[in-house]
Length: 201
Image 1 (cartoon, rainbow, N blue to C red):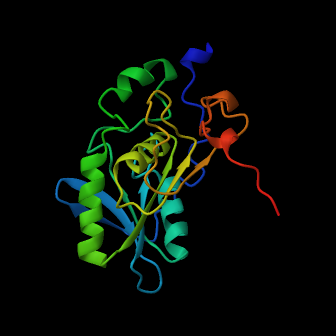
Image 2 (cartoon, rainbow, N blue to C red; image 1 turned 30 degrees about the vertical axis):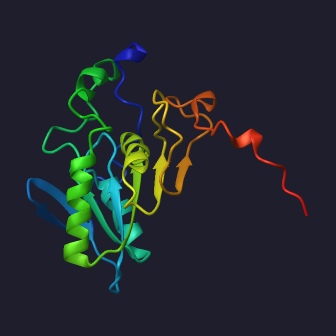
């Protein structure tokens, strides 16, 4: 089998029987998974799923972990009902699949979820975390939405935007040295980093 015929390289299904501690909710036309912490809080996290979608058990497992650390955590269906990637899909078809699932077109969904978190849970401190496809979405909204107090992008960056360094709030990017889609040369480095004065004392 040629490498182009191989499914997307991800060890899928580790928690395929995991059901999650949270519940599914409807936010206008968007479905979402919400998990609450043990005590009331005004802090919340929007979790942006990867290509496997909002119902993927591994993603709900992560949502539950974040909630267990004291944050109301919500994972909306950013694909808006469109079919997520599956283990039987092939990498050579990824470009076509991605055309109507653009991670840079999530602003309306994020706005609706922010409104929901404020109204339903009195959330005032809201951050965002995303993986791969979701990491790209996080990078995008941290450039456009000042309401998000902090962001974490895991294995996802915007490579082709001149404004990609103009982050509105703190954003943490996490990569693997041997990531097959984001090489070390492509990882985000601020152009001013090497021009900062040396720390003394």
